[in-house]
Image (cartoon, rainbow, N blue to C red; front, top):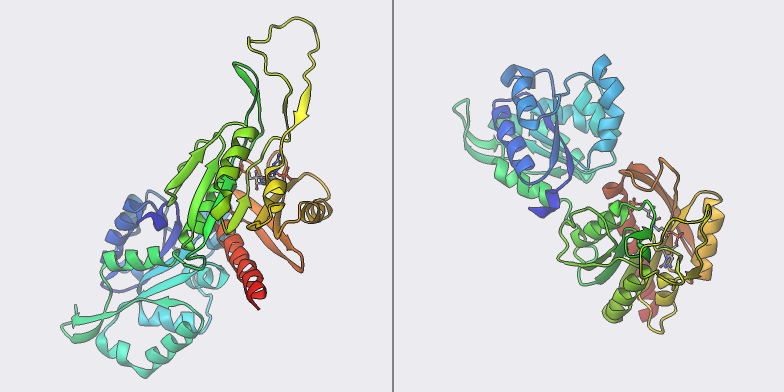
Length: 404
Ligand code: PMT
């Protein structure tokens, strides 16, 4: 299931006999490409030893809310921010009661309050406990908050009873976990995304480029594919796998990127320009390797085509989203680009040696003609999903205004 590739999942294990099945769940999630961190409640550790989960996840298991060792490395807030998904399996009746009422007395319940990511719970308990009105009322509260409850199924239970309360099988839980990322908010739309740097040759062995790793653009393309869009990714030279995207075109220079975009733009609904396209290229590429001679060396550069501006100027332009990479005056520069390039939206990021570019995390401020939204520092794949949600909203609004 490609929607789990690279996803960061916190697996919460609470006390119950089916905790042993959570061990298999770790293996399955990892087999599907997810990064898994396990959090256990104290009672879960009575059923299965943390060492089992540590061996299977190849990561330390978290059991304490305030642990001197983990707080310095991956404390509870970091873990909540890190997670793309919190999956609680098995979720006991006691955990469900605490979660429904917003308790934050141990690590797992605290994580559930501290996260902005989706939460799935897979209940498991005795059939009478499941049927109890208190449990059902707690589940109603949880459901009303948009939390996904999967299962339980009915059958013979470990205690000998027969009825509802058996945890879903790990394979089924993995399917639900994968589906949570498949939002389908852009189903039926065709997207073109650019990502990565361009390289501008100066002689047969040398080029000028920038530090873009392609991570932001690739994350946007994957998020768009998960939103159900038909995505084509045009990529500069990077060392990344395109997850969930079938159509990837590799280019090297700005000129090649421009040609590749313009060849495909006709049937495109949304264009997202996340590539760090070189603004200039050498006026003349030396046919032979340039020899070292004088103490200084002059290179005449000429302006490259502005791909984004060219797309937004088309008669039947797609919904056009630019990025602005700024080292100063973020808001002013981004707003200026939004207006000068006549864009529908722009995602502005502050970049420097340690920020935004060539790293895993980023923060974005998104501007459009009538609004703005800040997306605080987060892993790029999380940011990309929030950005795609905003794009889908604005794109649909523009379309509905056109039809009315
Ligand atoms: O790749 P990462 O390491 O993950 O880093 C991500 C990123 C910082 C590269 C990305 O988030 C980002 O900001 N991309 C745009 C970088 C950029 O070129 O910004 P700009 O402000 O110089 O350009 C403004 C817009 O015009 C961009 O959408 C750019 O793609 C586009 N452009 C620029 C020049 C040009 N000749 N043609 C263009 O289409």
